[in-house]
Length: 338
Image (cartoon, rainbow, N blue to C red; front, side):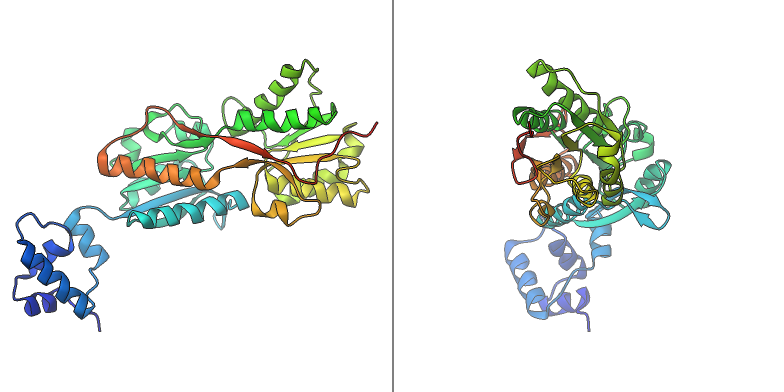
C-alpha cells in the first residue's frame, strides 16, 4: 500500500504542510533538524511524493514534450536518426529530474494545440520544416519554453541547436572529388529556401567551387527512407552517367547501396556512396558506409541544456548553437576507375 503524506507527518510529529514543504523543496521556514527528521522518516517508510501533487505545490509539471512530425494519424516519422535523438534527450532530461512526453503531429497547426493543451514546462521540436517553426508566436506558445533541433528558422522563440550541415556536405563532396570523382549525384528530399537539406546542397556545391570544378547538376529528389533509396538505387545508373552519390541521410544511402547492388553495380568499385549521420547501421552493412558524422549525443544534450537554462534561469542563447561535424571514411568509397 502506498505510504501517504499524513503517515509521514504523524510519525515525524509535524503538520502535513511541513512535510509537503520539505518534500517539495520549500524549506525556507523549516528548521534543519526538522528537515532531517522528515526526510529520514520518509525514507524509512518508503514515501514517494505524488507527481501531480508536486506539480500543484511547485507550479511546475516537470514535463517536457518532444514533438515530431507524423506521416498520418497513425504513424510517427521515426527515422533511425530521430530514434537516436529521442533516446538521448530522454536520458538528458532524467538528469535534470524531468519527464519526456512524445507526441506525433500530423499537421503544423497541431503544434500550437499540443503546446497549449499539455501541462508542459518546455517542449522540443524535432524534424519540422522551418516555415512551420517560423509561424509559432508568443500567443500560440504561451508560457511553454520551446527549443528547436535542426531548424534554420529566424524565430527567436525557438532558438536551439543544429549540426553544421553546410560544412558536412562540403566534406562529403570534397572527399569524393579528392578520389577523382566528377559525376557525383546529390540525393535528398525536396527543399526550398533555408533548411537542413538546402544547407547540405549548398555545401555540396561549394566543394566543387572550391576545387574549380564545374558542378555536375545531378540531383534526385527522394524521401529519407530505406525503401525510396532502394528504389532509386535500382535505376540510378540507367538514369545518370555517374560514379558517386552523396545521400543526405545514412538510411537513404544504405537503401541506395542495396539498390545499386541488386541492379548489378559494385559499391564502391563502380559507384561510391557517402551518407550523413554516422548511425550505428553504417558498421552493420556491406560495404560499411562512409558518412558525415554528426555528434548526435552533443546535439541532444545541448538542446536539453538550452531548454533547462530557459525554464530555470530565463536565459537563452542569442543564436542557434552549431555542432561541428566530421567525415568518417569506411568501405563504400574508392578512387574513380579510369
